[in-house]
Length: 129
Image (cartoon, rainbow, N blue to C red; front, side, top):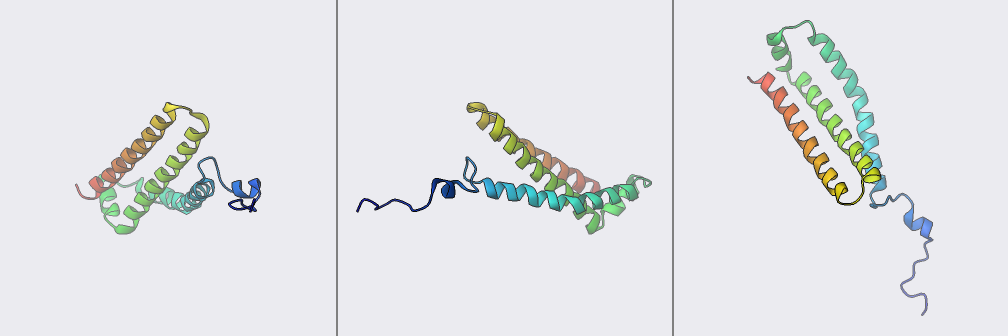
């Protein structure tokens, strides 16, 4: 009767793979997956920028009018911003305390969203003037 409601798991087993917010593994995997996704996207983005260097504005618009280069640029930018947001979030959670933490997390979310919208708008504006 004394063992009713008690777990047989040790404290280490209950805490393993969990950060202070109990989302340590999930957040860690998001950062790693976006890091791996950014490797080929970076090579593709650099290749695309190098091919666009010798073209004028109309040539760049014509090139970005094709779906593949436009999608490559948007994926690179959006995955990079997503990766940046999670990196800054982990820094904020580690080093900012008190009410400043909540404000910093909100600022991180709004800054990332504003940056993503601005970049998407810029690419769409170049494609469709």
